[in-house]
Image (cartoon, rainbow, N blue to C red):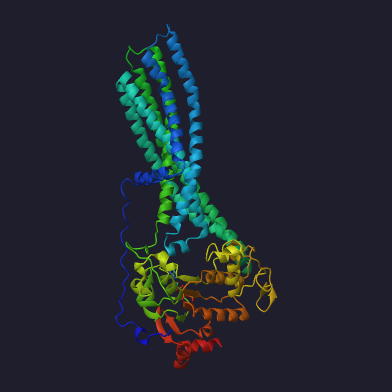
Amino acid sequence: MTMKAGKQKVEGASRDIEKPSPPSPPAAPPKFLFLQQLKEIVDQVPSTDGHNLFICRWIPVTLLRTVTAISAPVAVMILDPELDDLSSTDMTVFSIVGILNILGRLTPFATKYVIDEFKEKLQGEQATKVVEKVFDMQHGAILTTPTGEFSQILSKVFRNLDVLLPALYGDIVPMIIETFVAVIFISIGYGFIGAIQLSLFLVYTFLSYRAAKAKAERNKEFMMALFSEWGKIVSVAGSYERAHFFNNVDYEVNVASTSFEKMGAKIRAVSRGENKEAMLLQTVSLTVTAFFLGVVLAALGDEVGGLERAALAFYFFTYIGSLDVYALGISNLRTGVLEYQTFNEFVNRRSEVKDEEGAIELQVKENPAIEFENVSFKYGDKTILDNVSFKIDGGGCLGIVGSSGCGKSTIMRLLLRFYRPSNGVIKVDGVDISKVKADSLRRLFSVVTQDAALQNASIRDNIGYGRMGSSDEEVLAAAKAAELHLKESEGGGGKDGEGEENDLTLDKICGEKGAKLSGGQQQRVALARAMLKNTCIYLLDEPTTGLDGVVAKKLQNTLNGLSKNATTITITHHLEDLRSVTHILYLDNGKIVEEGAFEELMKAKGVFFDQVQARR
Ligand SMILES: Nc1ncnc2c1ncn2[C@@H]1O[C@H](COP(=O)(O)OP(=O)(O)OP(=O)(O)O)[C@@H](O)[C@H]1O
């Protein structure tokens, strides 16, 4: 590969001065957000496997509940019986009403059973959607969220359906159906009483909703505190070695116990507030509703007989009992929707680098060229890359060096399109990467980063992750290429470094984040994974970190050999490793301050030369 001198810009002459954009005012919450979110949740239901069966079971159970609830007053209204002269028809109908009322007591259990079975399916589906959303999030947002906080958010949305579905399908919708059916019958039989019942129901619903909203807002406050405090508590597990290295066990315990205390204080504050407002509002409105219905019954005209009065009283008595459960359902629904909203706020920090409309598949026939044209990038207001331009011809090998934090890895992230440059264009094989499908772009890269990011699975699975469905022979060949000698490999293997025996096999479990392997072994598994993918662009960010000298040297030879078959970018602090690369960029403060081949830079006796000398 040859670097074209004319294309290389050491310093951009016409650099855009990027001013921080003024903070935008907070967006007003959309109107009827609750209903929108509820619709979003309910809309998911029909897509769920088993939905039709659920509806088939739920409808009869709900109808039974409605029929049961209104059976007594409707029977009396239709039959108009005389208390001291009951006919055999009256007796039969009243027996049926009695049986219905006994069955009616069982409907909450039946509803729960029907919902539970369906909920499991929906939870499974929703969990999948949740994880898909996570992979659609902003790179920075996901990386900077503590694991403990993240796990809380995920578990909350999963548990959320436990509350939400029974509230909606078990308490609220059946109560609304029951009320409207009852109001129709009672209006037919007693005129104004139906209208009064409907008005009281609507007012009660409104007040319960307000109480539920206040409670949910407080719960949200609690939830946010819980997420971040829980994140701190969970991080204690990861502090084991650090705490002992620095004799800071007391400090770590204190961090966790302070978080527990803060959570406890939040719980107390939330429940105190709840008692004061929400519960008071709900209790008062229930009492007022009961009182008015009582007054209405007492005010019925003389033409309404004792049996009718008793049937109506019985109905309103049980109805008021159901109202209490209904209010609890509203409260649970409001909380459930708010939790869903909180989760959405988290995952909706979507990647800004989505595929554009009409994005094309990037297809390359041979090793592609890579080009940065006047690329600038900021994290927030902080400029990380400032007008960077370079080009690697197809099959070329570029080394990127520079002080820590100068923006080397950022170049890699921009190339993989995790972020969008604030200025400039990045091209792969001559195509602007913002115009292509991200999947087709990423398919071209084999990546090794400083963090091996291993799964808690076998070495076979970890290497095989590079190309799913690979055979053991292919996995072993990749391991060998990465200087990871497994026992199953040809010639006995099982040797590390200068021939030290190891116990590595394909079945060896790597542990959480590779904890059961040494740092160097983790790094070689990560390399083998990339080598198994074996694509036309290799991105190597400190690929020999953590390796002993002999293995590092062998591996470096292998990596140097890669450049014959791929376009390669190597980021490293080991400057001597860059002797064979075709071109080196020296970055400082987001700018290219020196560039050229190794020997050219040594002759120039600039910063690169100083760094090489300092390391000798
Ligand atoms: N997600 C992020 N949000 C905000 N700033 C970030 C983020 N990631 C990195 N940075 C900042 O961007 C700058 C460049 O980071 P980058 O990882 O590119 O450095 P680097 O040159 O690869 O460093 P090193 O050699 O230490 O790996 C650093 O100052 C870092 O603090």
